[in-house]
Amino acid sequence: MDLAPRRLNLSYVLHEPSTSAMVRDVAERGVAEARRLHRATATLAALPNPVLRERVVVLSTSPLDAFAKRATPSAIASIHLGPWWLLPRILGLSASDGTPQPVHFIDQPAAAATRMVPFFRAPARLALPEASAPDYPAWFAALVLRPGGDTLLLRLDAIPGPEVSPGERDAALLGAAERAIRAHVEQWSCPGPLWDAPAELSLPEFAPG
Image (cartoon, rainbow, N blue to C red; front, side, top):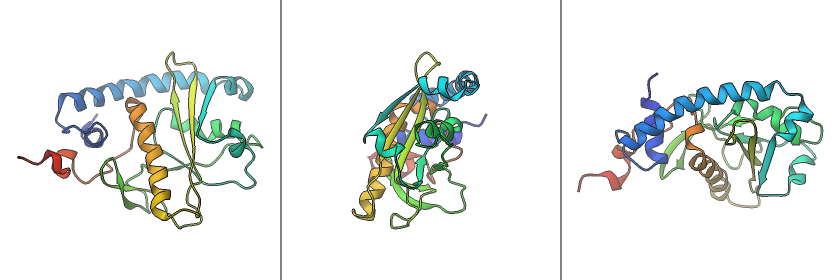
């Protein structure tokens, strides 16, 4: 497996040169973690909904009822973190009607519509609507495998609406994504490089003295 794209992304998250031993170690552990994720979540995915619901711990910045009782479906943003392929189903378990919820993954640099936004200290190419757009995400969700491999953690962050500035909406959403990645960096499996060059070539603090 080519670890270069993973190491490039990790150089920003870890704030280390992409060639450093730390970045290389985390990139290699991430590959092993991906195999563990697929094995563990295959078992979880086979569980019926009532049983699976008992295996999910929810950490939310807003009362969970605010998500479950939404009058109309609102856009939900996420990243390729943990068993992300289970996220629509897991969100459905928290929604009022129990149906899987559509999720928009922002860490897709090859998506048809992207824009450059500040992410981990530098402009990154993310699949993110304009903050003034009506389909701008109202929630950020992330799903990770908890230690032990038989339970899941669902993180939910409410994103401010049009009552705040576009910059504040972006900052809230991207801040939630950054916190989730930092907390579970080995479970992040972004499908491609989000930045045009590694951190040591872009961030001023890495420039030769």
